[in-house]
Image 1 (cartoon, rainbow, N blue to C red):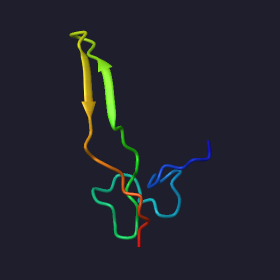
Image 2: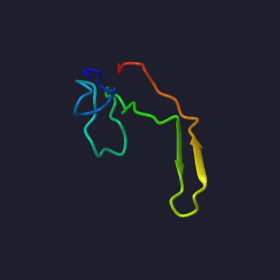
Image 3: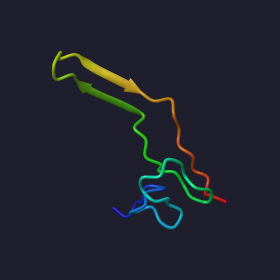
Image 4: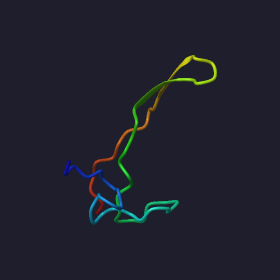
Length: 63
């Protein structure tokens, strides 16, 4: 689609940190992919499970 994910090492461009690092080095962007809400049916109980995240994305470019 031509729309990179910020911080993705494969498609995110020059500011993306390498995969597998425990912390993002200074000057690099963290991966900016976030599921705000997830819903699924538990395969064992049949119950609808709804999960929400309070996390947000950081859009600032690394300095």
